[in-house]
Image (cartoon, rainbow, N blue to C red; front, side, top):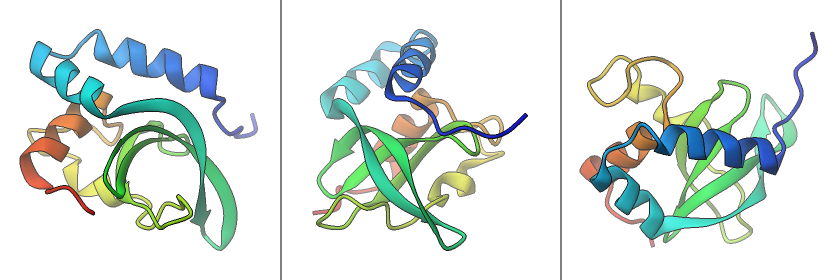
Length: 119
């Protein structure tokens, strides 16, 4: 089976599924920064691809990482390009993320607890 980039509609379904497992505080925080899902450029292993951004706070976004099948956080440049792919990997195995696939709630909680807004 070949890998296929996620479609916006598919990511919207994943986000809604993940939010159903979040507590009220996680949902409220996510909703505060939620954006209309859109594609953003990303460079992986020298190849230009795209991911779906689902939330933004200043110059930092939460996006769906379709290769790892989890939510990620990254700063973006002025053109909206993801600058630090895979930055959320540091969450894996912590109390904020139970596996390599981080849920929207886990990433949002990590965003709130450890990362000031990037301007």
